[in-house]
Length: 356
View 1 (cartoon, helix red, strand yellow):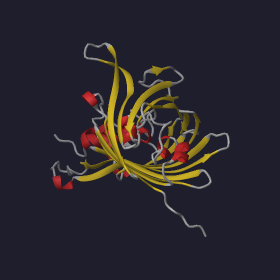
View 2 (view 1 turned 90 degrees about the horizontal axis):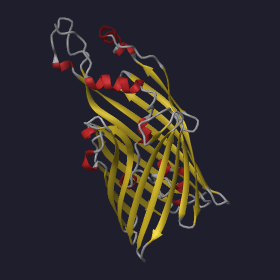
View 3 (view 1 turned 30 degrees about the vertical axis):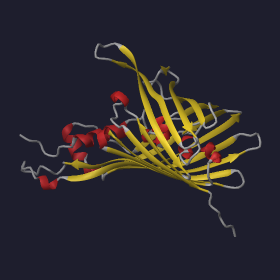
């Protein structure tokens, strides 16, 4: 006998994901810009475009132009999930910069089979509906150059998460950052979710309570999800090889404090996730990049612990004020996320603003 009111597998996955506290708001840590993906996301000390608002807001002071735009699109899980990023940043004459950033990570057209079987056990495919699961974030950024000279910056984040008609959440958080330059060496430190980011979930139980009771699932309760602070430290070194050839080497280290994660170094206090990137450029026109991140210990088919890492490569072309970047991030299928190709566009101009 067929039981009524079955959930789609995708919906059960979504509910379990919402219940996860350890990886709260993980979409905020996916990254931004094909340049960064091509360098293994090791860019917090060298970023100079509008994506700086995401990676390191203090570096917004180093924008190439006084008005910058960044756009990015990428697919995850074989195209099931889509990630879109957009940012606009403006540099002021008084050594300050501001930025507005928007990003969305979502899965669309998920089948909802709650009403596919009627009270008499008949299947009616016309009753199948679809819904979307989407995470949104709007971020306001500010940066300033001090007299030390040290760059300071920060973000205010507003979060909105929607699971069709079943659940929704709102949240907010803060990031702070600082950068310092010594000759050809940049040092940066970014504290993400510095006061913890609180996201409040509310559930429309009338949409699924009956089915949860019949299937023995726990009914989720309204409440807060907490994203714990994350500390990112990075250093970048600029090396000029020849007159028109330059080389950039950067390393970043992410520290999380929510007990042990599957990272290269993990303790009961913190987990350390290192990243490495390199960028070679010719005449500031052509850029070739490579990086390594997601360094983990995994168990192979022989049940032995082995070191696994995710290498990336990328290329970029800059013509006047326009930059187009591409990254291939799943070399040898090392990523379980099944996403490979990332494309982004950056555009900057020196605009003239009239003041009353």
